[in-house]
Figure 1 (tube, rainbow, N blue to C red):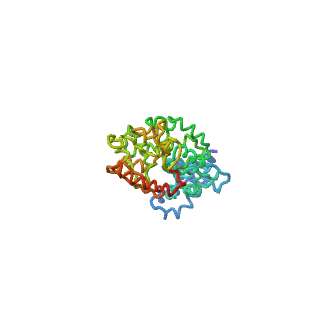
Figure 2: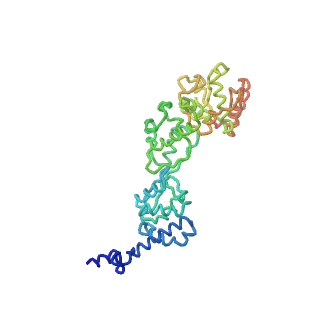
Figure 3: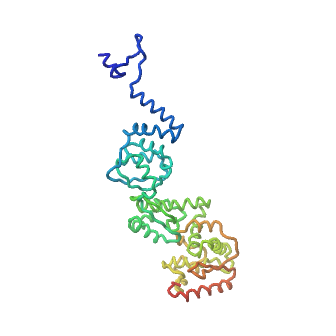
Length: 381
């Protein structure tokens, strides 16, 4: 019986050491595994050339930990920002896409360029895929299925809700409701509960199941990151955002942003000048009137009840009037040097803007804008 047990462990032609017998040797399977370990070591040192010869042996060894593919039913998998390769592998394994995490890690090790190409997003993959097939699928950005939406600079929050809703299918009312819970969005205290200005314009890919609050939080977080990157003191965040939103709405072209920012800063910092501390912005008046127009009406300009009427009220309006982009924020932080107190976009079609130091010069420039309005009667001047 003892002899039979020894044969099961060591093989029928092998015996334990003793009584002059040869030392025991491992079974053939252990010898094969040892050879594979040596081959793996050579692979590390020899790179692709070594893998060309021993790759089939490796593939055979890991086959039991991998599906043969191509897979059957589908499932959605989210690759989150900052996930490591091992974390992605675990996500795929938990979703039933691959058989084991190790199979994916091995595949990524053999194709590091593909592994580096994986981007955050939601992907629809088959279940029970071969790990190398799953890797190749994830490495192709065209396979991301998350809703993609671009938010341009200068939109009102209400405009942004409509765009997000169209792209994601989340109702506009959900965004309006989420915007009220500003603590959950991470809105800075200086914003005083108003998300306007803090929904940073960019192109976003949100997971399919993300809520309105999830999406707005991502946008607010991005705005905070930009303000921090500009090294703006938090005590100046809201002032900067208000000015940037006005610059975004008033600047005729990107080249004018720094000069426009200088005009408004000069008006605020030199209240004894002819502008007596008033920003005199058409865009703020229109925002307060909730009417999008090239210029406000006379009635709107004379409306004292409008807190955003900077033609009548001195200083900054109560809050931002749009959601500015990086360039407008940067223009406020780094305005142009100049003595201007006035500017007017004389051709809204081209964005041509003229700047002036004196009101008399500004009046002459304004005549050009008035002529444009006469030549374009359909414009909302």
